[in-house]
Amino acid sequence: MPKQIKVTPLAEESLGVRSMCTYIETKDTKILLDAGASLAPKRLGYPPHPKEYRALATCRKKIAEKAQKADIITISHYHFDHHTPSYTDWFTNWSNPETAKQIYQNKLVLAKSYRSTVNASQRRRGWLFSKGAGKHAKQIESADGKTYQFAETSLKFSDPVFHGPENTELGWLLMLTIEHADEKVLFASDVQGPIHTPTLNQILAEKPQLLIIGGPPTYLAGFRVKEEHIQKGMQNLKTLAENIPTTILEHHTLRDEKWKNQTQPILDSAAQTGHKVLTAAEYSGTKNNPLEFRRRQLYETEPPSPDFIKWLKLPLQKRKQQKPPI
Image 1 (spheres, rainbow, N blue to C red):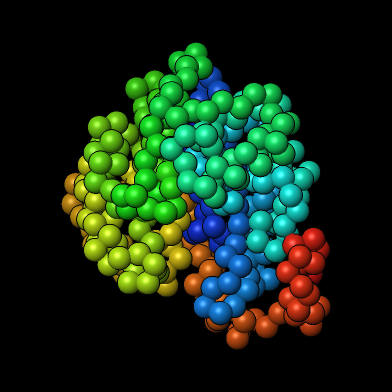
Image 2: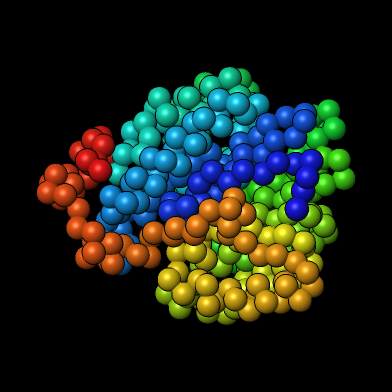
């Protein structure tokens, strides 16, 4: 594990929310990666449980605290679990315009371009960010394919890579390699394994000591993602684990209740080469607490209060404007 680059996971699936927000610190600079967090509006036929909202509130607090310390905030792409938009949505994002302002105010924001190599949805979201939360930033730069130097720390952004398989409708994102004192940490958010083999080759070429990566969305296999793409993502993830000393595996993979069994062969293969594959919670020394796939169980074993049920019955726009009673 890196010693000169300090890595602190803040919000992740293993911590109960949809996010990959990570705080990274070197002696030269402090960086907040993908400062967003959200909950699935519906999963297994259920809206978020109060336990998920409590986890989201906790993660939001940690993000806000580290944002105060950060010099730089990065945005790999414009999904709401990877940046904080400047409107009120307590239902899925647990945020409002003030939340976004506090995160991005007076920061250097290095972000995926919303003008090139982008799908329609992210183009609109990126534009809205630039006119909303982004206006509070000290500076916003499109970081696609660029490298930034801060004393002895470099931030190298990839050219846009696919958010999963080639030509996916979900669009593109940026990977980021942070290098300091002969150490490298590579952040690859929603590459989904990666499913796309050229993305695998880019990661291997960087030779990081620590990889933070979003795994394949196994919970969507045969439904929204082809089985062959899931298998390719798992195969490529195994290759990474065999070649990189430490991998933090997060995001889509941990939305599947079978994630432990599905990833065990990868952990075993990594161990044979003396490598480790961990969740963000495990890396932080805390207990795994993925919640999304447990919704049905949570509603059955920990029924919400009457006030919460009453809030759930409000029209969607009112739920967005009003914090749930948790």
